[in-house]
Length: 172
Image 1 (cartoon, rainbow, N blue to C red):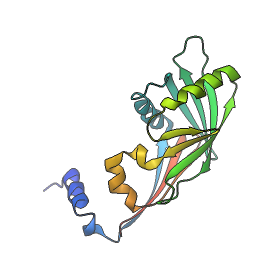
Image 2: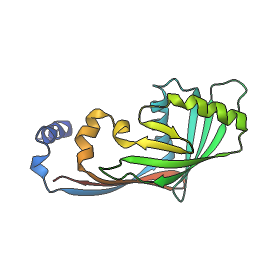
Image 3: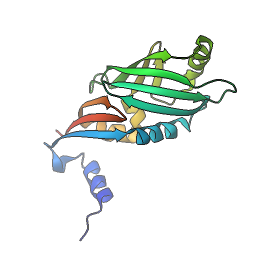
Image 4: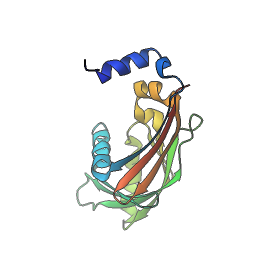
């Protein structure tokens, strides 16, 4: 008899995970550059931001190089560097904060880009030279309600061409 993982998960969810209370899970999840860029492209599809494409290039040392191609005619791609400034702290402050700096771009283009970023996806906001990612909002209301109460820690780190998510869950 085969176990249907979706039915098992639905049962666990409906019982508030009582049947596996006391469980503690630590995971290290390396995410390739291509998967990361696919997730970002999917998120941008639902916005009106004037962004044609985003190419995220993880670099060792908690650094991301990001090439943003805008939909504005005659505007060259804008290259930004993001450095992880603050990891999320669960449950008090579940936000990942990245500090950004501009590389090789003209100031006027940068100003226009920043002015258009008020149309970022839900859970992503710009605060001067910081990009703040609200993990519960990005996860979505249903997943956040189910998983965030059991998250003890979540950190994002980078290697060349990979983002590494270190995650610790605990079911009381």
